[in-house]
Image (cartoon, rainbow, N blue to C red; front, side):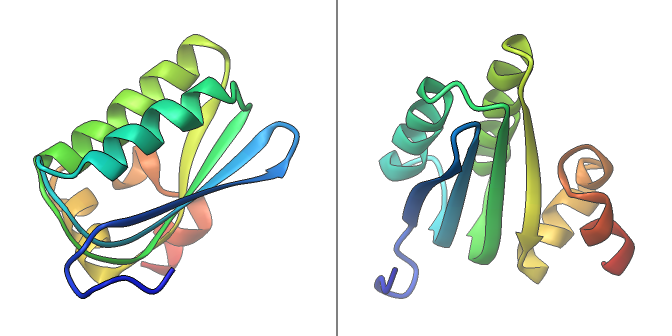
Length: 113
């Protein structure tokens, strides 16, 4: 997933029949179509769990958060869930200041953060 600095890169991988891992890298804002498409693609798999690896995200604005929350809500309607399993310091800070860390991050990640 070697992208240009600042460019948003998204990769979806089905790790198990009911698990999808979404790996994010770069910068995410309102203009980023790759993130919007990935949300739809992940939801279409109807997984029980979507794991988000945001360890290489350098920036995310409110539309990035909105994407996480919309995907989480879509999955919850179908009995699934979303968990941020790894996060960069920028994402950790964003989730902390918005009060979403305890709702989106894995307990192990929250404890280490």
